[in-house]
Image (tube, rainbow, N blue to C red; front, side):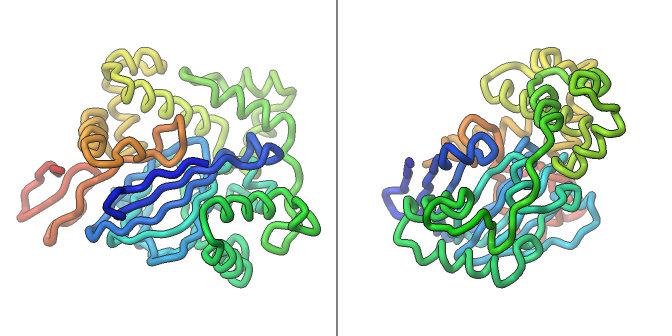
Length: 331
């Protein structure tokens, strides 16, 4: 376990490694306690993982930054974020406290006994996944633990049925079936990147028809094989950009037809242009603790955005409409 803390007490972040019996399906644990005294806005980018968040403090406001899904923003204390093909905006008033568990979609399907297709491009109240009583008990148990190490150990016990548990249960229910080996192999092939792999060749390698592969992916992953490859390509592009590769070289390395194609796809999935993405990342890195923007080690997961000023109406992620004029956000 590793812990980072602000000397002035404004924030604390802990990262824990799950028990070996849970890996690689359960990627990691993250604990956080934030008291910044100002609005905090994070753009969570599409990636290969889903998130179970158990909150102990004020709720977070979750929305589609561009309003493309037509859903009303929701305030949630504990939540389950399913597999996404577009970014999600999370906002809080500067105070946040809780624990996150990061899982591969197929692991969430098994451990939580849910149909992942029910959570495609959506964020659900944890009550809808575990039931209100189980979700509340989980939050109370973790919140009253004395520290991060104890909370992570409790999660290990819960998810592995180590001696602290009596049977293979999650929140009081039996876990779901093991993922199909064909799904796991196809997932590995599609996520390998950086260039997309034809779905037909993946289906042939695992011995299934494309139709059967799509049906199983919808149930156990929550995305189509094509969508998984699309998200994987974005993940690789994000990694290359943050390492200093030019957008043109990134587009070529990730198999986009040309740079305009890359720009369109990047904007559709993140709400930002590559230049806006890099600008926000640079601004966050200049702040104390900026190196810990990302929620998962080794992955580009998030972008810190400036607080939205009074009177501004969101137009799209990265720009605002103010006094009838479109103006770029500044940090």
